[in-house]
Image (cartoon, rainbow, N blue to C red; front, side, top):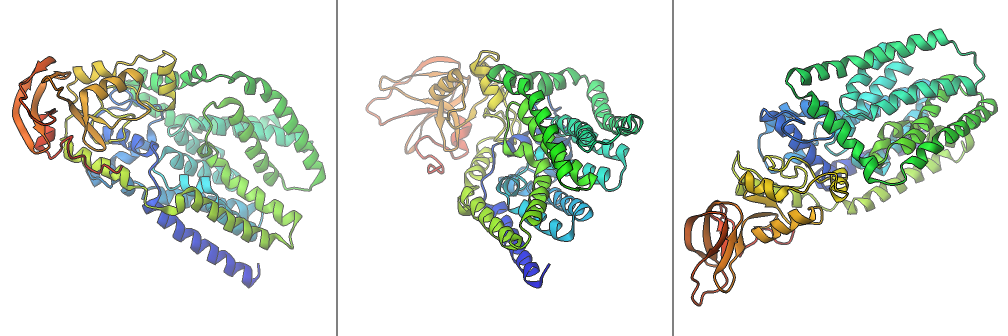
Length: 517
């Protein structure tokens, strides 16, 4: 590379780093981040994932996060703090990309591959977030480096087993490695050494079984294995029953695979590509068609493990086909990607305040040990009275009748006096119940009702309540049982009956906190 090209790389890399730091402190929190933190918080409270706290992800990420979360304690900026552990995972992916590209291509390919990867919007933004995918991606990159550079299939399998304990999508990665090996041999007209292939496959599989076996034994020993199977396997299977047209991609998969083999043979005969380069390209292709064919809920983060290979393939292809113009192409691509990323992130305006405001209200309106009803754990530090969560699979299952909407029963039975604010993700019956029996406090709601003009109201959850107006307490606290109630309100302004601790902690339906959110 010329001095000009190196200087450009350094400048673009520095710009990317600055934008990444800016995004860390300003880019919005994805709803998955507090969901994962709520599960990790459960471990800090002695709760067992799946048995005591619902989750449909594999558990290793949450287990590893719990000690750090406990060290930080309950604080409103916890989501920002828990983005810090994502930094070393990001670096592992970047370093792995560099090592693979430099070993099997060149230093120039490695440098531009890393830069393009870091400017690509899905990787740039998702690698910031506190989510299982980042640990999954880092473990995959380590396994890939061990496999294609150091040639240690058993150790690679061991690491893939750890990745399996983070995400079940690791099965697609293992399948990809095997299918890609066969396709590579066929495309290059190689004599398949079945003995060697079997030896490598057994080494990978044996290594991959160790971590899941230890995890399974642990859950079995504490009597939570059935809960794990239900949440991670059976619950996720509901997605195939709540989404149509899942059969067609699976029927088309063999046809697409045959096309890939045919195209791979054509490329193998057209270019004298080293075997490992060719194999890695086939891996990226096989993973893509496999996840499209068999995974139902597909999002950009599902392709995180292949993004380094996509970046390497793109860089190498541009250099091969337009070497003279490659420097200009790379520079333009990186700048356009950074602009697109900034546009998608709303130019990195501060979009974190909404979540930190809610967590501030959680820690103010509720005390440890009190319940709080939310969608899927957004409030992090409080147990939910209802087991299932309302993410995409849960909402679809409830809409089609596979899950019952018993939120109201759970809230009443468990004496839950606080709930998340109204929104479209609440199931219809739950939404109606909460709207009728809870009053807005800002980002949260507390049990209570507006008192009608004739002085009547009803109590859904037995407990201590106060009657308030815009100036303060009118009467109470009074212990009310569930059912219709009546108070005398001669010529007074609008009144509300409110869960007494909420008012004692500074909340009132007449003075909403942070109403602009």
